[in-house]
Image 1: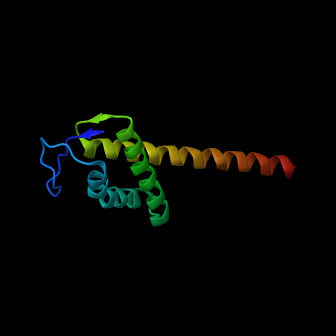
Image 2: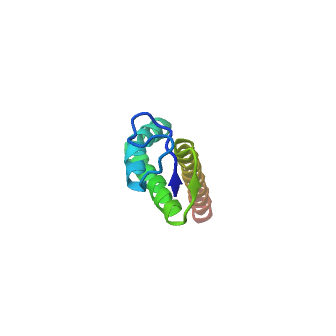
Length: 104
């Protein structure tokens, strides 16, 4: 992943490409805070932010070109959060249907 970071407290300037580990370190806390705010669950937020960082590492390995890394991270975080809640809803529907089937 070639990244051009647009962040004041990152050691990268806007025209400099940064190492993926530095980028992950720079955004980890910020994204974790965002996900805690969205989920109200610290453990779930930790799990989701790790998933986002894994996606960043995979994107880096695949050579994904990202111009605005902050926007990219937030988009991936929102998508990961939505995927999680869709999965939870699906599992709840399956459990509810199973309960109705076996308790009828």
